[in-house]
Length: 135
Image (cartoon, rainbow, N blue to C red; front, side, top):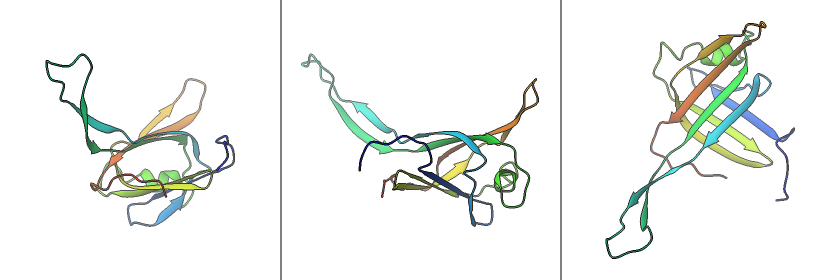
């Protein structure tokens, strides 16, 4: 795989509350994804540098976009976040490699700026204990 930009090479889908994947990449203006690992410091007093063990894997995604109330678009996908406790499959393909994670959306934030933009932000956290793995 060659080096590439994030332009035109991304697909993104998120399940709605009924479990149907919806391609909402046209509504997403930017996103952030993280797949951190916990660490435990096991440094003994006889060491001059840190020793660590890797612990649990985690995953988080934040999607930011433009409000779109059309059928099967971003508002349809996220409008049930405050009223349901449903995990959503988030699938991102970047430059031909895919990461799919079962995620819990924790908020659906709408913002109307002073200049008139209506945007949203949705933070999602890993839900099911499966280690995030790129395919």
